[in-house]
Length: 503
Image 1 (cartoon, rainbow, N blue to C red):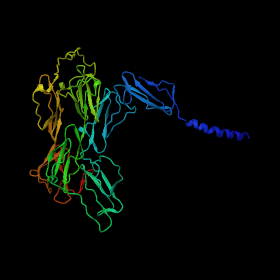
Image 2: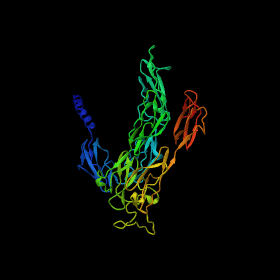
Image 3: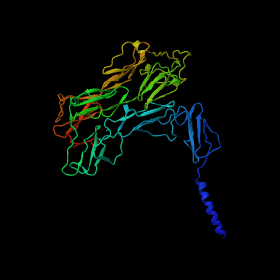
Image 4: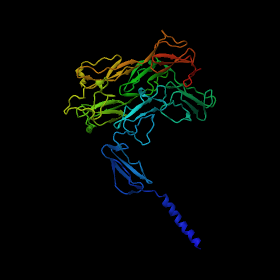
């Protein structure tokens, strides 16, 4: 009898015990060095949210000057933490990877090195960034590789198998199509693959009804001369920079980046191939929107994606380093600065800044004084005081500001040096950039390619690869511009880029 009653008691008690064990745990008050939080309690029930901020010289380990944390089963998430205000949070670099820090933040002067995702390459081969006073300097940009392809063509009655959709596909990517039931690829089974070659997909399959007697051919339109398509297509914020008998080449204006192929062809049915898009790649620094930043601006400033500028502050000889990252303006606190142009650099990007207190200037703004130095550096003055804008061969002024000129090189040239030029107080210009040739010339009259149908001079950008048709049908030679020299394969039916094999 006693055992029976004991079992009954256990049956009642056991579920309650299980419920007590499974109940969410409360949280103790967090330990927060260098900051304070609210509400102040000894314990917090599960799901309670508290708010915290940090003392002067510190900041939360997340974005913003205050942050929240939630009690979740006995632990705070994210854990409240105050870090040095000169430390950096993890940067957001699209299409890139880098080694993360276990603490979730990075100390001042820490450097990271990025690796671009497949199909992307670092712009200007810049792959490092440094934490400097709480912000990242010169964040790398991963842009689409010239050898990568956009999304593959959509083929009626077919689907791509064994591959998730993505916006960019690396060179040599092979994708397989499969026709739907009742359709087949002519001369094959129900599947066929296409390959990304030098930024373009080779011709895909056509799925035709598999029933006999009704195979109505609908071949893909052939290329023809551009005059056949009439007036040139309009690409907003882009211009035709090269016109050939069989193609047009577009280039985006300054402060815009190109999405899609820059080369457009005309089909035999009178339609143009897909046009590129000139996407905004700049930030707008409007003094009306940054009233509390202490900037001394007379008008709106424009920064290219990834560009840095030193903007003068209200305090004389102080400036803020401003950077355009992912279309957003990031800026540092006003600090005492040393003009970069005095060392032959630019007043905007990459200038050397000195931390507060590294130089002593008299009140009211005098020349900087360093023990034993008579180095008097010129100051900047309006560009009109230097007279006519200096001429740069193969380059043009694309932006004129009261205090600087911004240059851009023509197509097939790359800019060496700073693209920004300022006027010194002695009425001389800062060092001018150089527009260096970055292309190869393929002239059939001087250097004919055997067995290649080439009737005119061809120009290839540095690193560009191009297929030229051979005298045999469906055969071509691959030419590439490397260090301003042309290298070619033999006449190939197919070229394997990965193995470097031509057959």
